[in-house]
Amino acid sequence: MLFTLSSVDRLIDTLDTCPWSTIGGRGPGPDRAQARQERGHHAVLPLYTIEQRRRRDASRWTLVQGVLAPVQFVVFLVSLGLVLRYLATGEGLAAATASIVLKTLVLYAIMVTGSIWEREIFGVYLFARPFFWEDVLSILVLALHTSYLLALASGAVSVQAQMHLALAAYAAYVINAAQFVLKLRAARLEEGARRAAMKSTRGAAA
Image (cartoon, rainbow, N blue to C red; front, top):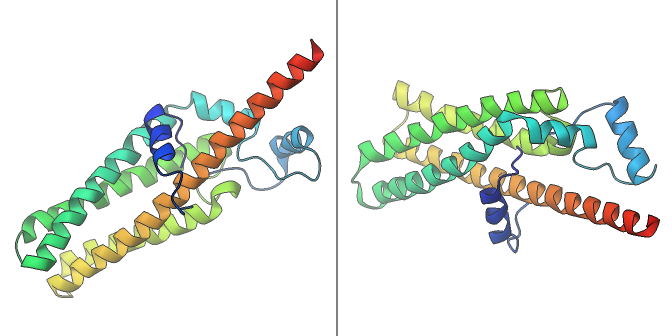
């Protein structure tokens, strides 16, 4: 969903060589018309228009998302280790279960605040143009995590099945995180190209 913090930039640099792949307006509107004028009528629309970028940088929710994203990833790594340990040895069920619940709660927090961020920057809570498929997979990730909580509360399936459901949720989460990392890298490269073009234009004018 949207990170400009230096720590996230460093993470993107680290994953830059990996083969991994929420949030722009839908419909024409003045922002998109402005973007077309900046890039040319037949050019691909940028991830952010100038006004959207301004709102992104000014929003407090950008910072919230920038903090929650790495926190969720750390919780995921710890939880994955605990789940795999339980499946391999049969030990540590309570710790594994608690870690999955915590991971799910952090996911809820990042989804809710991310939707607020998306509404503030782009005017929609979900499925904004540049990040449509990232949001689609985010919904699947949320559904899988919620399914685990329902299975845990109801006891409808075995503990082994619950753990495998958690692993399925984690697999979807990893793919979704990769989508956002690549999209955020694209946004950063786009910003760099825009600044270089502005610098070149100023130099030519001088």
